[in-house]
Image (tube, rainbow, N blue to C red; front, side, top):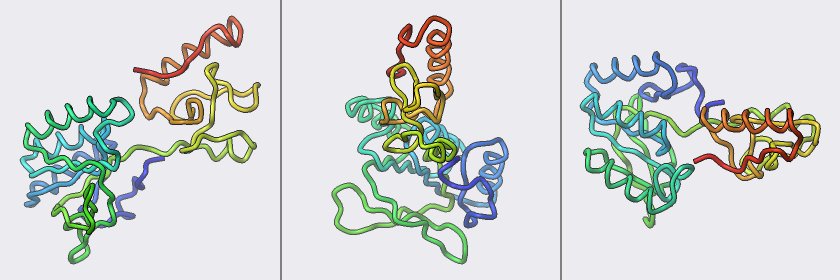
Length: 215
């Protein structure tokens, strides 16, 4: 599930998600109507892609990430800091370690985001005619929860290095698999690597292959 509903009717005017070609077409149409600024919530892979998309539409662009650096799933802090410098060199403003309080509305449409910057005592407003929500997905773990399987600390189904759940006869891979109970990959490539490891284990025995992380 996306962190924000896909249904445009459930969102204020000027707030978009970034998942489909229709979403991109909506952004382009809004930009043509006179939008000047855009704020992207999410500093992961998809969020940075969305930020480049609005930047290419000639909008003043902001990226807001709650983690202390960009792409926290893929990079360490030094890598994230280096990436921030590259992104800012394009003219995109990066805000990391922020707390996002609310979408600011004027006349029923988005006018900005009220945030608390890292180290700040009070909230401030990032002005934005368009707000793009690209802060990842939530694993669909309802069935696993109903079955009594152990879940990860941040959702998903906890799996070990053999991709077994807490029930050794049930395995999980892909976006729902919480690796070691710590995190889920919301990307295609790790799912493929997990599938390869699981296929090996099913064919050759449970301990034949181990999956711990993807690069």
